[in-house]
Image (cartoon, rainbow, N blue to C red):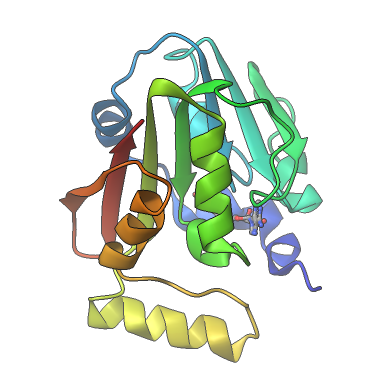
Length: 186
Ligand SMILES: C[S@@+](CC[C@H](N)C(=O)[O-])C[C@H]1O[C@@H](n2cnc3c(N)ncnc32)[C@H](O)[C@@H]1O
């Protein structure tokens, strides 16, 4: 399987830019006690920005090249993993974050189940995805298909259905001109 992210890892953070920290703090209800998992967290671009607002942060990602870029970011623990099969006991994390990554997971339903399994009761899952209801995002999805990425961007209603399949209720918390944020409290 091709790791497309290995080709962009060195420039990824500069390419995408900085996350909106105040939005992340608000939607993740930070600061919070406990551990945060940034699933499909890549270089740690997002979790580095909120580090210090939780006790510890794990960046979990399939791409060794992306994870390598997170080295040297104090307080972040990079772990190479597949989101569909997480190497953590039930209820390990008080916060779980997925930014722009769910649509890259091969088994999205399975991954959502795993992410909810390792979330503590009372914890929060936050999913940021491109909003496929918008034409600009449909264009991005087409480009990703053309470069043979196996990504599949789902409508927000379908992501909520994946969450609710595991007995937890989900809701759209915010949208902008490109993205949608979905929260679920366990
Ligand atoms: C578009 S990048 C987003 C990285 C990071 N969340 C950010 O916003 O900076 C998507 C990430 O998902 C990772 N990924 C793809 N499939 C995965 C899987 N099954 N399990 C874990 N990570 C995966 C990729 O390696 C890549 O680093």
